[in-house]
Every structure is written in structure tokens, then in C-alpha cells.
Length: 389
Ligand code: GAF
Image (tube, rainbow, N blue to C red):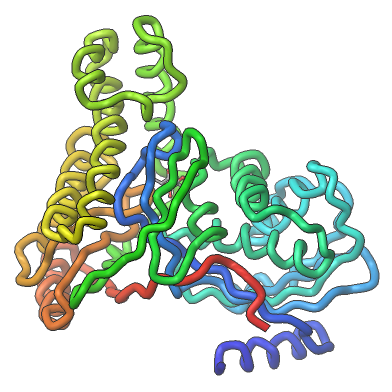
């Protein structure tokens, strides 16, 4: 594999020694169930074959040396494993540092340091979970080399904790779960309230999952992500005055309609409406897919986008343009924004023989309207993070 050979050569150049193992950690695309994870609802993501590679070697001391081929200008980033805290100067390396620290907080002994060289094939800032990919990858490397025997779901949870507590981004668990638990050709139906999950085989019979990147950078840190979380929490608190419940994800659409007048703020009511309806829509979409009703699955994807646009207000002109253009193309069953929103990507289900025209038509109209071009990737659904050799 060319990527890995190249990485091994770069490893030798930067660290003066040979890497002993190679790892891969995917990104993710969420098919439906957006902004439901932190509301205790269902999500339906899959891991994709774009992701982050690492080649690594164990050291004998307690030093870490990290290098990213994507950000060579930052050079080799060095630090001691002992007590770590977030530091802006470490830039991207805060993600692996966070995982190392959280593992230590949970009592895992990181007995030695490592030299690790990373290379990512995910477009940066595209909302395809490059951060979660890097976090879970770091956990997998430590687990493997140090034989820590960490259960995979625990590793997923600790990766999320690193992002929440170390990096300071209050994300839900969907991304780390998809990256850590992904399965080739399957999406994961995950109930984020209970962490009960199951795999669902994706058989699209002549259709493919096409990701379109707005090329408007998405960042959870500077987006209104935390504001949306706060609005949903405020709505939940008011609903709890009329019904005992832990999360919005526990309500059916009908229950929400009956109780929603308890939410006095109309904006908060809209946000909660999205969370509840999107959660139910996700279950309906999975059932449609499993009943081989791809048309219905696509319609529910479209409805998801409309709700994210109108009720949740996390789309923006770039995502709306891509989705609305997709809805007009031949051979498209459905299209919606995927991930946190405010930029990033859409996901569409497109008939194989229509993909070339889909990309060409959308690129032309999007560029004319937005002023720069989108990118397209046909997604292959991949396994979760692991050792590849
Ligand atoms: C981002 C977050 F990281 C996820 O936890 C999830 O909330 C998603 O936005 C929206 O569904 O990817």
C-alpha cells in the first residue's frame, strides 16, 4: 500500500528509526439521526474508508513524539506522558494528548511513550469526524501496544471524554462510536440514551452513498453547537415539570405534541421538536431500509434536512444549496446535511449510473451560486479503528 510505504519512509526521516506497526481509523458519515445523540436519541452512522492512518513504534522512556504529515509545518511535537493539560501550542496534538490523559485518569498505566506518525485522508474541517478518528486511533494504539485490554465501548467513551473534558468540545457520542465500532457494509443503529446498538446491513442495490463537501469549514468549537445543546436542555427542563423523563429521546412525536406547550420559549420548542421528530424519523428510516424501501428511506433523509434547516437552524446557504440541488437531480433518492452542520458535508443516495451527472450538475450550479466548488466522495462503509499490520 503506497500510503503506508510513504508513511514508513517519513517515520524513518522524522524519528530516525523504523515504525513497527500500522493502524487505521475511519471517519464517519451519519445517514440519519442528527443532533439526537446528546438528546438521548437514536443515530444511524457508518464508518467510512476515508480516515486516519498511523505508523508507530514503542519507546523505552516516557516521552511521546508525534508528527502529522498533513500539518508538517508544526514539525515533531514532543511531550512527557506525566500529567498533561490542554495547551494551544500543541495544536492538533491536543487530541492524542487528551486520550492519553483520560486513560491515565481512569487508572490505565501508560508505561512507555511512543513515536507516532499520522496521515489523514479525510478532508479537514468537513464534518466527517477527523477529530474522533484521531482520538479513537490514539486509544487503539495505546491499547494494542501496552496490552491494556480496554473494552472497545469503554475506549469509545474515553475518547469522547477526551474531546469533552480535555479539548473542551461538548460533543455527543455518535462520532467516536461510529469510528470505534464501525463494521464493513453496515450502519450502526445506536440508542444514545442506553448505548444499546445493533448493526444494519446496507444493501443499496445499484445506488451509492455520495458525500458532497461544501468546502465551507465546519468546526464544532466555533459553531453554535453548544448553544443548540443548551436550548434542548432548557426545553427538557420545562418538559420535566410535566412529565418524568431523562432525555428528549424518550418521547414519541404524539407525546411531544401533547406536552410541548410546557416549553414557553418558541425557539427552544422548535429545537426540541426537531430532536424528538428526528429521533422517531431515524427509527422509521431504519425500518424502511430493512424492508428494502429505499424510496421511503430517501424521503425521510429529505425530511431530516428540512427539520435541521427550519427547526434546528444548523444548515446555512452552502448545505441548503447542495441538498436542494441534489433533490432536483435524476437518480437521487434522498439528500441531507450530515454531522454538526453550519458547513461540512451532505450525504445523498444516488443511482450509480447517475453519479457522474449528479456531481457535474451540482458542481456547476453550486459554484455559480456560492463562488467556490464542492468536492464529492463515493463512500465505502468500512470497519472501525484497528491494527492493520
Ligand atoms: C457532531 C458531534 F460531534 C456529534 O456528537 C453529533 O452531535 C453531531 O454533530 C450532530 O448529530 O458531529
